[in-house]
Image (cartoon, rainbow, N blue to C red):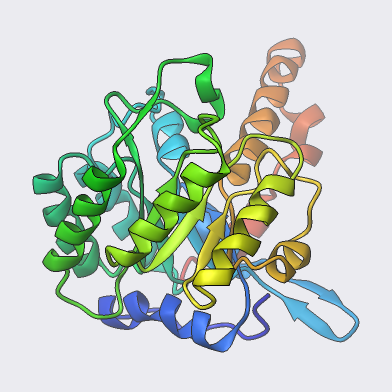
Length: 304
């Protein structure tokens, strides 16, 4: 994980946009955490763990469609418009310096995706991940429990080519997310898609799985690396959560995204204090579970 932090605020869109590629050139693996608000992003950027003379930090942010939708009380079906999500990211960028990877869901129609790519570039987003599903987007962790379909290899490869042709900055990354293992289409289908998407110009490949064992994503990484040793590989270990960051990097992954844990951690804490305040008619009993006002004042730059 990262051992140095960016100093100072006020990064330009260009310098932030380029930061992810720069980190990938310097480091074997990047640790990315979900940020759904400026405050959550500030906490991520300031987080550190010291062990054996090494200080570990997160390398960047993930803007999740699931957490962005949930934060607004809406279903994770691409209902929240890209413009609203970009506005929220702009607020995060106002107070932080780390690069951000954007969850682009299916990317929408190819004709719309090319405009979304340019908007993302202008904002300073480092990478956009789009998945190869079609129709009404449903969360991947449902798998085949709900109707979900994939685009054909040819259709999605054409979408990648169109988005890459629209890109105007060399450092921006378009990453193709493969849903074959989620939808039980098999390893051979996942690899065939990965090879085609890489040949179409994808700057990275994300493979997703909802199994509790990491075996199939490690097999995918091993077989993909036989043909493409340098194209970045991305995974989101939400289901197979017993494998460590270091083990995933050793298995061939360059970017590991913890995709929803900031939001999932915050809401149980908020839920827990509400009945106690109603019960006691005061806040004394919950103060030890709350961030102190002093901590808030110290966290936000310029408050004092």
